[in-house]
Length: 396
Image (cartoon, rainbow, N blue to C red; front, top):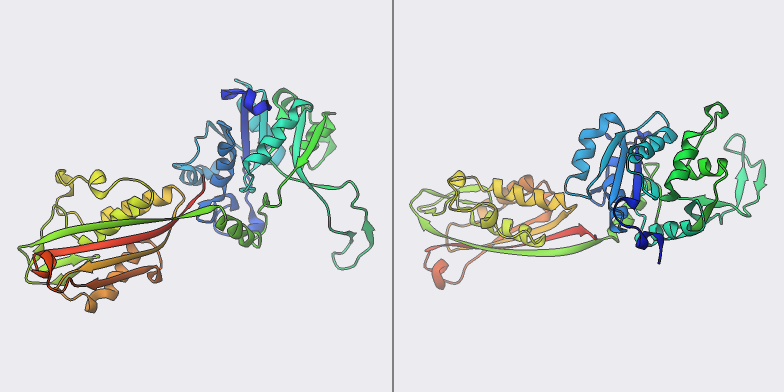
């Protein structure tokens, strides 16, 4: 039985260090809050640990980033503690360790927020290695020829790669041992502590190496995001949701279809604005994430939604999708009626729908058909609509 299988509750904890500014990666926000495959990087890093069965999670962040952090983790893994980082990575890691000291775990993992693709098997490997070691790191052997250069332009010598490894995170340690090692660091050494294993080694702790993963990349520069997007594409699933709605004609001088008011000799009867196209599309989006139907979120018996604009319903469904890390790939709405003619206003409907959903107009299809004078739509008693939404969601 592995240490993680034999420990429960607060006996295993993980710290994600996310206090850096990530300036080399560019962007308007620190890199850990940028999205990868539609999901904030920091959320992916926490999810990797949660998916491996780590229930006690600690975030170490820059004090200015608390609003960004709250937005990125909303609806994601539960974070037990959030603490401010220090001026160096070592100080940030130490702050995270101290936050656990009131209820110390037996095992602690320390992970970089910039590594969003650690898998559960890797997490278990580093924990298993603690059965006979004070610490363990995932790493990969260096396979490229190494050159030393003083000016970055000219080779001065070739460096032997024998025995060299590329260290990754999460790194696992027996909690009392790594906390003591951090506490006893001599700042007068002026050492750049690039990872926690370095501190453990300097304290004389035994640190094992286990097999790392080529996919467990550290996102440092702008170019790394391209590879990260490629990896993220392989960690998502595609879902399709469908919706159908009907509204009968009533008194009025226009109908609202997909957010566009079209003059007509009747209106559509309904508790809200009776936008049959957007109601069907709302149900399609809710269906793609298993979130019920429009009536369960906006009951027609509730007077608060009387005459409500249906963009409210559509925005709500899209927001629920995005809270789960989802992305809208394409939506397709078919309006079924004899009149009014949809063609002249179709482009307006497409653009309005794209605007409400926050996607490109090229991802929206709206079309119309008739039932050849058959059925209630053929008798011009009302309008029906069906919709299909194609979305991607991160694999959990």
